Image (cartoon, rainbow, N blue to C red; front, top):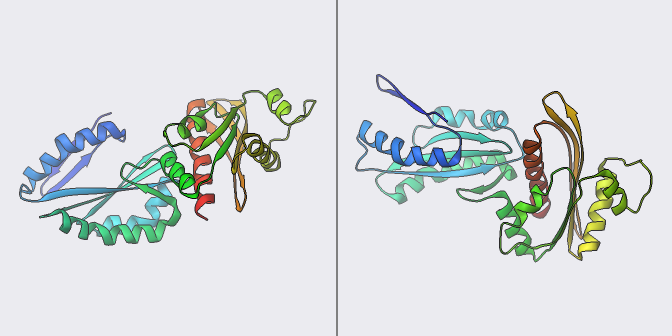
Length: 271
């Protein structure tokens, strides 16, 4: 993906690709050296802190902090968006790391006060890593049943060697869901009630403290698929649910749905 730097008088516009690896490489190898030379910052330190956001869209994040973006000069604030995940980068320059942290801290505090629990982590944190840590801290175990997401959720939960995942079942066909439900016939209602039943059943089957069901049906559409989906979290003194409709290509739908499921679980764990 392309990036560019435009100079006009004392003003500079820098555009970088949103792909994390490309962005980090260009930022460290090109942008930071350029800024140091352009603004004679060789004697100063540039440091950044990233707040990671999920559960709300880029436009809503921008609307809630646009005054800070506009008015704050040092540190600067930027928004980087990717499917299901938004990064808010706070960048400060100062003569020492302590001074830079002093500049970043009040801005971070203000952003957190506005976005609340939509912020799930910082810097290198991942959503599945945060969820794994929450589960382990509570000494909870998890069993998962997922359908149209094709194992995307299970794959993320298994990335940590400390994963508390007891059991996972990935069901691809309606007949398999009916079999799991011990039902016969073509009727299968894709709704919150069915997802609740599945979450409770997978919890019992996996002998875990929490069950999660990610249930949905895919229908072909002009530019890919549409999905009508529900996620339910069920456990002792912990419950959460979310329903949504979404369209797009299959990999995107599966990835975003796994993100929604993880975030629903995270919110249930911290509520």
